[in-house]
Structure formats: structure tokens, C-alpha cells
Length: 448
Ligand SMILES: Cc1cc2nc3c(=O)[nH]c(=O)nc-3n(C[C@H](O)[C@H](O)[C@H](O)COP(=O)(O)OP(=O)(O)OC[C@H]3O[C@@H](n4cnc5c(N)ncnc54)[C@H](O)[C@@H]3O)c2cc1C
Image (tube, rainbow, N blue to C red):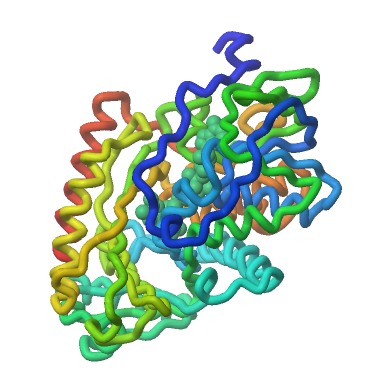
């Protein structure tokens, strides 16, 4: 790298919206914070207003309420992946009985639990402070659901792992899981009580809107470039600039758009659809539940009961998109898959249509570690969510904030000991490999 390349980092691309999330569309409107217009001085500039960026800002304000923070969010808070996901803030390693999980050592399991529960602790603190109701933040736990003999076996194996680790859980028989979901297809279930279920757009808006001076949030304000200025950094935006001593990159896969972690991040999209409201009497079972699939590549389903009627969320399909953008056609294709998963699971809801469809970007690493740490003097990364950003990116944001402020904690020690993301094979091998791997794992997930 040349000297100039190390001193100036220019965004080669900016995030693009992928459909309108039903979570945002069904909320009351919110006035975004104004875009940055002019020059500001801050102690820390945070690039990205998702789980990582907003959690970093929250942690900084807790550690030292005098630190001036400027958060730059390219879009509108809640409209990016952090507000568009399925809303599971999961407390346990998620790869339920995947090949990877069964070999996982106890130490790695404990480490994941520490990371994920640190995120839940921060989120719970904010929920309590702000009096968020269960429509926004519900510590109700999660079901894992099976639909095949292979899925049943995975849940049993996972339950055994949890027993070994002393983690609370309950296996549900076919009859019991059907009584929860009202769906005739599920063959068994596993309940774990520690997951928090959020309305993701409402949650992430809530996190943003409870940040107070001297934390400033600028929406519709992409960071276009940053360069060294004395001992700090000068960040340019379309109509202004931030001069800051430190930067936290909390823009997930778009860290690569600034030249960081090149060839180390796998840009994968996943897709969701949300039904129109239906009369709750058309579906037996509980009116609110959230279920992830027994096999990691399967289909996530939630039922959301409201006073106006109920809705079902279906999340399924992964695609590898190295340009970090997808077409409307890709959303439509995933939508057809969602429709078939939905009608198979809920035959009594014939005629209920999907009202919203969308997708969102995730950044995975080959060795499942975050893209974390001080990547240039005074520039800290909290990126590479590995698909579980509600907990992992929240925790990365906390750890990056602590690292930037020189605060020591157990979480920080865990993060600084993590390996760096390993290099992906050169192109076109990564594309061929990623597409083949996703297709194979989706096929393995079968009906799940
Ligand atoms: C449909 C779907 C369902 C999912 N379900 C779950 C789930 O249930 N549980 C879970 O844990 N995870 C889930 N995920 C994954 C989760 O949403 C992501 O892992 C998470 O959003 C990552 O958080 P983050 O803060 O790291 O990044 P993001 O949420 O992507 O936030 C990064 C932000 O940076 C901004 N940005 C990028 N470039 C710039 C720039 N140059 N200047 C300023 N801002 C910039 C973006 O606009 C974005 O808002 C799901 C994802 C999708 C799409």
C-alpha cells in the first residue's frame, strides 16, 4: 500500500435499500434526525447506525458521558438491516447442531454465551430505562422447530449439549409444539428461555432516540471518505465533515467499501416476507411466538398478534452478492419460496397474502469471527456480524467502544483474543464456492 492509500480511505460504494421492511411499514412514522450540514468536531465519529454503531455510542456515553460522539448513518435508522431482521436477540450459539456446533468446545460455547448475553444485558438495560413494552422488546424466549426426522435429531442433540452446559431448555413433543404454533407440520420443538424477541425497527429506533447530547446522530449522512488530520481523522459527508480523534467503523460489510478486510468478508443477503393481517381465529395456537429452524439454513417463522389482527413473518433463503446489492427480482424469487413455505406451514390461512417483502445484507467471515479491532491508528472496527448481528454486532459495538476509550472488561478481553478473519479464496473461486455451499446447505435443510 502507498502512503496516500493509508492516509485516505474513500467509500467505493454506499448501502442500497433492498425492499421496504414490514417492520418499518407497520410502525407509526418517525422524523429522522437531520442530515449533517456543516462541520462538527467530535471525540469519536461512528460510521453506521445499526446494532454495532448505536450500541457503541450507548456504551461510550455510559463509560464517559462527556465524550462527544457523531454517528453518521447513510440511510434512515430502522430502514437498514438492523431494523429489517427477524428480531431474535439470541443468547446461545445459534448453529443448532450444525457440523460446526457439535464439535464446539465448551470454552467456545461459553465465549459465545458471554458475547451474546453482554448484548442482551445492554438491550435489557435500555428497555428497562425507557419502559419499552413487549411489542418492542419481549424477553419471551425462542422455539427451535423441526419438520423432519433429521430436524428432530438435531434438536435432541442440541438439547443434550445444553444439558451438558447447564443451560435451561425444554424439548416439546409434536403435540406440544403444534399447540404453540397451530401448524400441523412441526414434528418437535425446543424452547430456550434466554432469547429476547424484538420488533427490530422499533427497537433500533428506540436505541437511536434515547441517545442524548453530546451524542449526535446524523441520518441520511453517508461517510464518503476519511483521512488523517494531525493525530485524528477528518470524515467527509455530502454536505459536511466531522473532525474526530477516533473513528468506529460500524458499517458491517461496507467496511470493505473503504478498503478494509478486502477478500475476507462474504456478503450474503437473506430475505423476509410479512403477511397482511388475518383474523386470529383462523389459526390455532398462541398468538405470539417466534421460531428458528432446527437446521441453520431453514426457515424462521414468527406470529405477531396485535389488536388489529395477526401477521406471520417468514424468513428464508440466502444469496451471495459480492457487490452488496440485490435486484427486486431476487426479492420476488425469494418471495415465491416464502409463499410455498407459508402455505405448507399454515394450510388454514389460504388466501392470506404477503403484504411486505424485503431483504438485507449480512457480512460473514470464513472462520466465523468478527472483523474487529484497531485497524488503523485511531480507527476501530466492529463489523462482520456473521448473521447474528442483533447480539454479535451489539457486543462488537460495546467492545469497540471500550477499546477506543481504553476501558478494560471481560468482554473486551474476549474480543482482543479473537483471531482475525481469514482470507477467502481468490475470485472466481469464492463466488463459485459460496454459491455452491449455500445451495448445498439449503438443500440439506430440506423442508426445514
Ligand atoms: C431478513 C433478515 C433477518 C435477520 N434475522 C436476524 C435475527 O433474527 N437475529 C440476528 O441476530 N440477526 C438477524 N439478521 C442479521 C442482522 O440483521 C445483521 O447481522 C445486523 O443488522 C448487523 O448489524 P450491524 O450493526 O453490524 O450492521 P447493519 O445493521 O448493516 O448496520 C450498518 C449500518 O451502516 C450503514 N452504513 C454503511 N455504509 C455507510 C457509510 N459509508 N456511511 C454511513 N453509514 C453507512 C448502513 O446504512 C447500516 O445502517 C437478519 C438479517 C436479515 C436481512
